[in-house]
Length: 90
Image (cartoon, one colour):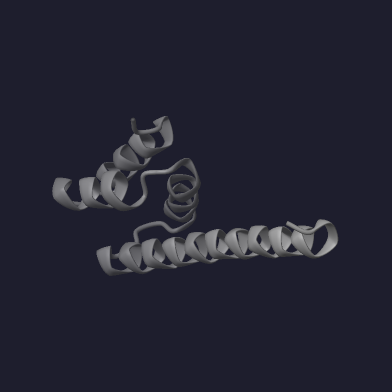
């Protein structure tokens, strides 16, 4: 189920005048979490009239940041598990 933020992003993209297929692709396929939709909404509210290419670049940057955060969390969890094994054994 898509979040309210995702629907808000879709509407914001439409209001900026982008084609419907572009709006659906961005909002419902790629920016479909609260985190990514909120970040993209912030970008759209700050920038007056970005080109489609600029929106795509921002989307890719947001997704890259999200992936880096997810990788960091996974690494931290793995390290915590290893530390627990070292301290307490199997």
